[in-house]
Amino acid sequence: MTSSLVTDRVRVGIIGCGAISANYLQNARSFPILDIRALSDLNLDAARSRAAEFGIPQVLSVEALLADPEIELVLNLTVPKAHAPVALRILEAGKHTYHEKPFGLTREEGRQILDAAGSRGLRVGCAPDTVLGAGIQTARRVVDEGRIGQPVAFTAFMMGRGPEGWHPNPEFYYEPGGGPMLDMGPYYLTALLNLLGPVKRISGMASIAIPVRTIGSEPKRGKQIHVETPDHVTGLLEFESGCVGTIITSFATRFPQHDPKLPITLHGTDGTLRVPDPNHFDGEVQLRREGEEEWTVVPPTSPTGYGRSVGLADMAEALRSGRPHRCSAEQAFTVLDLMQGFLESSETGQTYSPVTRYDRPAPMPDGLPFGVLES
Image 1 (cartoon, helix red, strand yellow):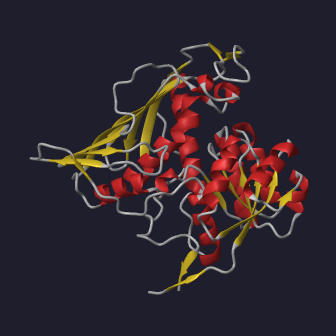
Image 2 (cartoon, helix red, strand yellow):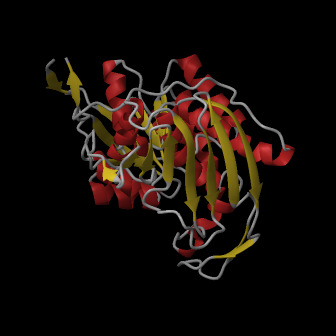
Image 3 (cartoon, helix red, strand yellow):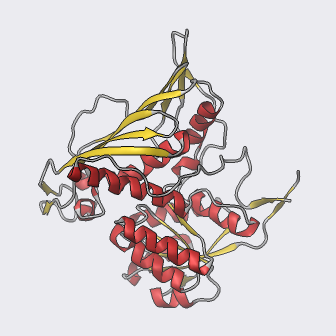
């Protein structure tokens, strides 16, 4: 097999120039397949500032960016409640789109995106792309090779106090579409799906533990937030493989006892695997098998050092090569369906079964950088 450099780069526009945009723009420089052509934001001064910082040639209104025939793929970095409406506008303009998590605020929004993309023959991708990093990919290889035997149980914990102590604009975390499950759940659930495959059924319990919060960061220090969505969510998941476990996402806890660097643990019939933080791309994977007295660190099985934009680059390369992209709309919809299912289960007291079939994406290639196509 040989490889050759991609000369037909994918031309990308970005809508939304908030805090996360700097991370995407910085990491996009590592992927030759990406050609960032234009930035847009409701606050054009924010877009101009990012364009100057990263050398992006154009700052356009949203309307002008969507009308630009040169732009093929639009990265949607708006706030969560705008993800679905903006994605639909991008698709209506005849462009592919990749957006930040969550996929939408409701199952109905997610279905609208899937239907709009399908009717137009367009692709949709969605974060998180942290599952493409060496941490989760290495853990997946261990599971797939049977090194812990048959997975039996798991725990997945994201437990903390909430973002109002550090985030400059934390209000949206406590609005519908926010909360620890819709904010952080996508990282953990996407990782679990990649590790364990499709889910059979779930149940959940959720509460608003701290109804009023006070912002401790600038520039809004002292402002109160009235919490409108559960800030503590616990779920049980039964996978089709038979593996059963617990996920907790919380903005209402202090001093959690689990190791925050290894927040997911998979227990199998022959061993146990400690999985690194799925909010990051790398991290140690630790394995202990039957008869061993110590944990061993599993060497990475795929490239380290990826950052946000790897999912976008994977989608861009897939557009050129014709293969499926890994951070797909279908995967993101499955995660949204599960997250909404936890909240509905908490309200009804009933278990919930996913509405669509989930198929794991292909594992990451060994050492093949995006920007290079197989030939």
